[in-house]
Length: 201
Image (cartoon, rainbow, N blue to C red; front, side, top):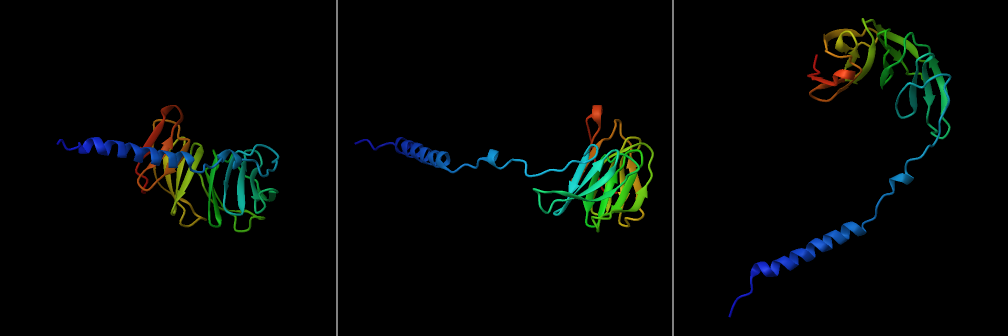
């Protein structure tokens, strides 16, 4: 008597298992993400709202003509402008950490603003640099700044009232924005694409 082939028995069982798993996936509940994305509120600013960064209760809008606007978003359906500070340059990028807002202020260098009282933002520190400061990101006590003339700049902000340029790395393009992870800094450079370098000062 011929013994049945083990392979011939296992193949149908495997097929049934695959069908069962497939049916479970197909019948699983799906999330309709289209129903989650919708406008909740908004607010009009006098000119352009060019840049935005925020924390849990406030967002900080950069207006190239009128400076910084602080908007209370505790009620997202009814945001309110609660603070304003004129800026000398055009706010191209900014980040907030704790009580301080760091701003790449185009040809006016980098500005540091105290936002501990959102209704009364005030100047804390300033760093003058040649060229235009177009983008920045913050990591620990350092700001990584994309500067048109100097390239990638590393600025020590451990004392926010006295930001200090630690070093700069020239680039071949026009640095615009910068991102930093644990090992590298990534700089977008317009027509020259992307430049990558170690971020540690």
